[in-house]
Length: 329
Image (cartoon, rainbow, N blue to C red; front, side, top):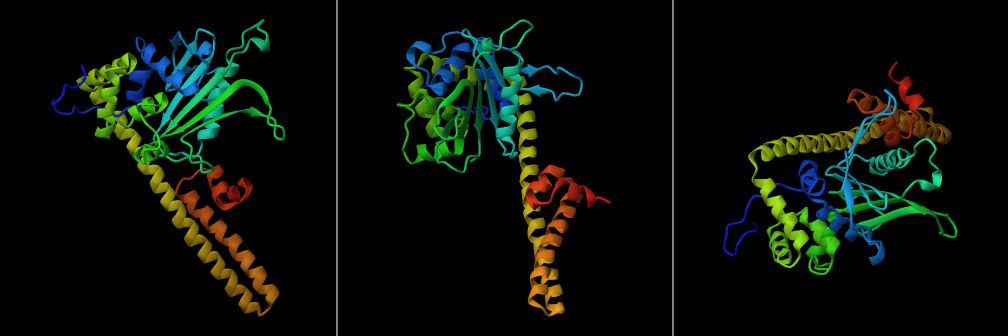
């Protein structure tokens, strides 16, 4: 049961950890919770709101042995056949848009069966909840993408829908009191994910839950889950793995920046020296250009030693993958 007035605050597990999120939003028996979140997120008209949903196996089986195995966080299908995937991500691996499209494509394409017409393929929705600022072009915390014509902006089809929900942007707006948990249902569900780390949010949600039976169910399920010793043990194991991964990504970012600065400085210095030695303006320009190229090559070599993927090195340095592969020799 929810905390009584005057009762000490409980220690909830964080719903931003995918393992915990699935236990509340992706568990059979909690369909009402998932439906409430999706109706708030998808902003469907009253006549199209989700009333029934089936939570299904989140694992997308491989069609061929060489295929990549994919396990989604929460996967469901509505009574109208809409396919839905929810992913929650704590660390920026700089691939969310491509990963989201990949998962979307897998869910969409695997609907097809022998003898089935393409027109029978149903709408497929991917929802990404991220605990970092991702879309630099906007301050909106919730952005939705579809397929539109470039110039006249008309929609080709509604079968593709991809959402990005950025928790830091949402939290910043709430702290500035630009949004309200009382007035916005999606804000309520998303800030539930912040409740383990923010007692003010938790207390407001407890008040709202006394008038919202589905939120009340969610918070009770969250409390019971948080008190289960076996779940807590598995949760902390998963939390440690995620935080270790997040730390590794941050260290890689710092090493990349350091390598870029060091390599470019060295390359440009060598290029200038070469240009000055030749004593010609043309030589100076050529030397600087060669220096930049040498600087990029120097950076690429350092990143290869650090174990970065060739595709990532190409993005960071501007060198082609073939040029980078040649540096291994």
